[in-house]
Length: 82
Image 1 (spheres, rainbow, N blue to C red):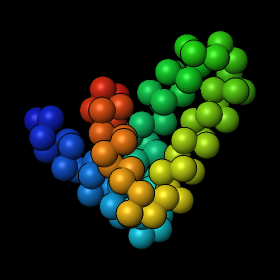
Image 2: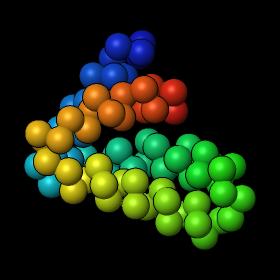
Image 3: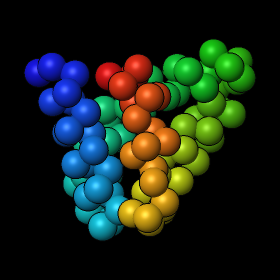
Image 4: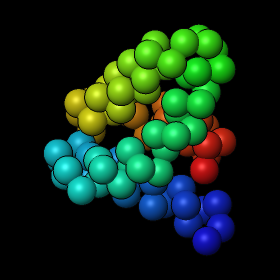
């Protein structure tokens, strides 16, 4: 799967998350939780704070409306993590 295909899959998952699709939320979480935790831990040096940051980040994505432009905001970070 090339980068363009991954981007399309991620964008599709994010759009489904907007519609409260729990399966899409789980898939997105499974794809990026480890990498997001690692980045958060490197920044904070604290496991509990890193877990909190990771969880809050996912909640922000899952709770935003489609009009919030989240894919545009997330695209660079998600591409780096994938």
